[in-house]
Every structure is written in structure tokens, then in C-alpha cells.
Amino acid sequence: MIKLQTNIEGKRAYFGVIKNIFQSHGCSFCSNFDYHQGKFDALLWREGGESIYLRMPIYVVNGELDYSNALIEFGTPFVIKHVVNIGLDYDENSLLTATTGLNQFQDPLDTDGYIRDKSRWAKAGEETVNMIMNSINGVLVS
Image 1 (cartoon, helix red, strand yellow):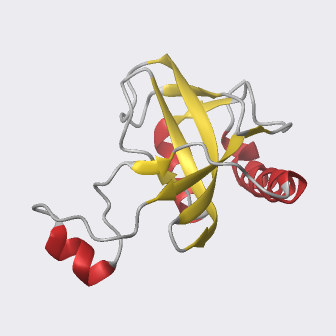
Image 2 (tube, helix red, strand yellow; image 1 turned 180 degrees about the horizontal axis):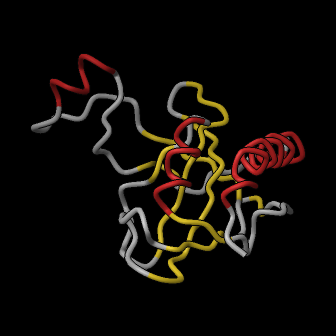
Image 3 (spheres, one colour; image 1 turned 60 degrees about the vertical axis):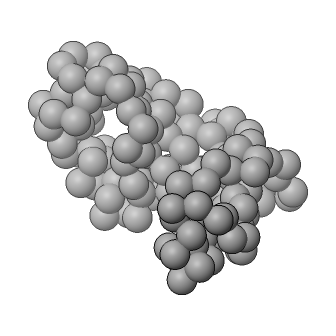
């Protein structure tokens, strides 16, 4: 994991507006959330079963997450690497795995894999955050 130095940490906005802006930049809202915190992920690189993501945590200040009017605050973004098993898994999901080569239901082999060339991925993550910051500056809440 590589923690990033950006200006987004501590900024606040409404979830509904932010979610749309993040999605327009190719970021996905992770479905594994609770009503008080969540995260956005941006895929920076993928090859085979290895993926490097920019992850941006958010925390609810007022309301409940997944409601448009929830006031959120951004945490410290970071870059992570996931390594998944792209081999066949002989269970009820085998047909999906056999046709796509990737089983979305398998646990990652390494959820926090070693990241080579950390400065490259830190720069890529910071550039992505800065691009998003340029889009959300007008919707931030003081």
C-alpha cells in the first residue's frame, strides 16, 4: 500500500454529486460499504490477474451512505495491488470462470501485493486524484 499526499483529504461534499463525478472519471463505488464509510476505486493498471488500484476512502459526516444527501468527508487516498487467481475453480461458478478466465467470486491470492516501481504508481494515483479534484472543486462544502 502506498499512501498518497493530496489535497482531497478532509474535503467534504454530498455523496450523490460526488458519486456521479467519480463515475465520470472511471471510478467505481465499492459495493462493500457500510452506512458510515465506503470507498471509490480507480483501476490504474491490469495485466493477467494483477491489478493496481487507486482507493479513496470516504466517511459519512451526516446522513447514511448511499443516499444522495449524505455529507461525506474524504480520507487519505492510497494505491493498492490485488493479485487474483485466474485459473479454473471447479465449483458452481466454473462455467463463468471457464468462459471469462476470471472468477469474480474468488478471494484474491494477495490482497495487498508488493508494488514494484512505487514512485510510478504514487505519481499515477496523485495525478488521478488531482484530475478528480479539478472536477469537484465547485461542489465541495466548506
